[in-house]
Length: 386
Image 1 (cartoon, rainbow, N blue to C red):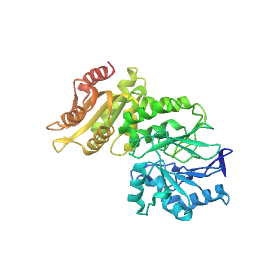
Image 2 (image 1 turned 120 degrees about the horizontal axis):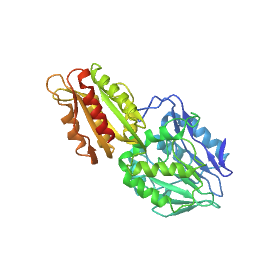
Image 3 (image 1 turned 30 degrees about the vertical axis):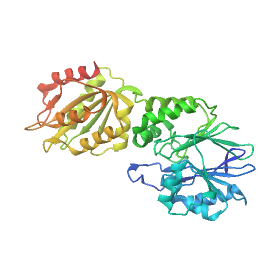
Image 4 (image 1 turned 120 degrees about the vertical axis):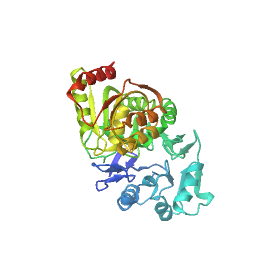
């Protein structure tokens, strides 16, 4: 049994077998479903787990309780990867009370179809507390981070923030990888649309003497908390994290990709601090979204298709718009053999985004890049870096 402190046990499970998280995000290093038990005069289980790992999760909870029955189950977030065990635990311990907010219990009924007798429900709101003895949980509502019922809790005596999905990441806890990259990919693809709500939560958290952050995914954070909170400040305010150029390319037969590769080489020779290039037809879409938010400049390079743009680029732009992409410089490279249409299609989508500086002019390839166009491509690179 793993203990975070003498009174707080970790009872979550690492899932090494999952291929797609939420049926869309590649997780080559698996996924952690975190859950915790506070042992005091009264005991509380904090969240459950995904149905994929319920047997191991319940075994962990049973071991931590060591023969005791839990007094409370605290539900910070009702998404099924964290709430699949609620009904199981509620039936196993009929005297256990369920702690959540009003929206929590509305969702609980929808997901579980279980009866909700009022005497078993403890409804909490902003600033309400739950005393377990020497430990007290203080509840902070976090609507739309990233579901409307989401909330976090702060344990006063030990300075532990149980942060729900905030500060989570892809990958198991034993993956042995740096936090930033997979936390960034997780944040922008799952929470990214709700930057204003994350900012509100961060302002509330700033008033708390946090010593440990216990998220529902990924590692428990115990050191250099300013680093993690600082990343969330940057990400949720939609500011670029790094100076650099991300080239997102949607190429049909490889000619548009060749032009993008030549552009990358020119940008690097001209001193760009970082240039990253993704093949939208083959590379992980979630990682492409992550890189678009990471850097201050984006180049959209795509072939024309059916009087519009090649579908992988259309899909990418849909993802960016859905996650509120903003505050960036964007340049356009298009390919069209007879009637180039990619640029105007991409520009129309980008025009609906906030605070975007569109680089002029558009660079156009007619079927394939010609040596005679290299001076024009050099000028295009200057405009991107200018």
